[in-house]
Every structure is written in C-alpha cells, then in structure tokens.
Image (cartoon, rainbow, N blue to C red; front, side, top):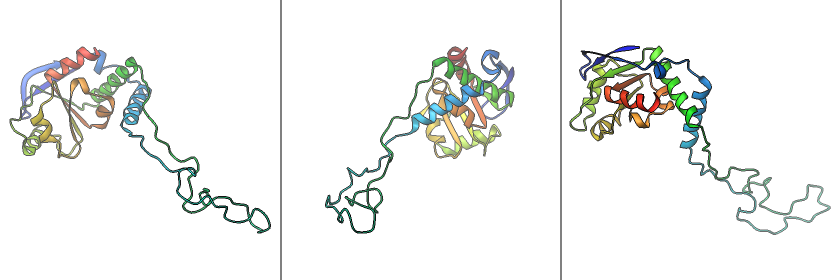
Length: 208
C-alpha cells in the first residue's frame, strides 16, 4: 500500500512510502486483538479494592440475645453480615489482574490493528514533526493542517519529544507515543494514526 508523505503544514512533499504488506495488509485476527486489549486494560488496574470481612470489623463479641426462646433466629455477634455495620460476605480482596500473553500473539494483534486502520484509510504519514517549545496552539495547528482536529488521533514518533508531549497533553482525544511503545489498544482507540517516516522504519524492524 502506497501513501503520500505530507509535511507539517499538511502539504504533499512529493515523496511516497510503501507500507509493508506483512504488517499493514494481513487478514486481521479479531481474537488476538481482543486478548491484547484485554491484557492492556487488565494491567492498568490497581487491584487495591478491599472490604472488611466479619473478622476485621470493629464491634463487641458479646452474644446479642439468648440462644433459644425468643421466637427469632439465633445470633451470636453484631459483626455478622446480616446486621448493618457487619462484615461483608465474599467481598473484594486485593489481587493482581495481569496475565501472560505470548509475544507472537501480541505481534499479531498489533499487525491486525494496523491492517484495519490501513484498510480504512486512517493512516497519515508526515516527514517530521517539530515543535520548538511547549505550545498547545502549535499542536492544534498541526491537527488543523492534517484535517484531523476534533478526531481521536494518535501521533507516533520515532523517539520521545518532550515539547510535543507537553503541547498535546491538554487536548482531549489526542495521544502521543513512540514506535517502540505502540500497543494495540492505542491503535484501535484512535480514529486517525499519524506516523513520522522514521517511526515507520522502527515498526518495520519490530514487526516485519
């Protein structure tokens, strides 16, 4: 698949790039995408949820009433789950939600996600992105030039750039990442993917 390379002003540079068919032109595997996104979201969970069981609730251990002869159910502790302020039955406990996923499955998921975006013509290639100082206005101008302002966009750089990151972080629906950190969730979550030429080379080396 061949795409025209644009500059930062959104104009054609006269150059074209060929997207690797083994990455951007495969038959997408939906289950691999599902597993990779599920693992990514699971890894974001802190897992620090906790409720007190009856052995952890503060309260008297006095027997509330005699065992027999009251006409009601027997009860021995104010900390029982049936009472207000008592412990919770089978409440949440701190746990780790992360799980293992094979490296080849994760690679297949990223290729599948990129193939979906390529088929939908949602990939833009720019020669370079340069912002000299942290200015949100400068990043908005870039989005306007590429005609993707108002859309959920993901800018993929070859290496980290603090000025670009700081310029974009206050904008809703906008994300900036590097090619080596690109994941399936980010790809599927964005409506438009913006790659620099250098980042495409890194992705070819990682997934090709």
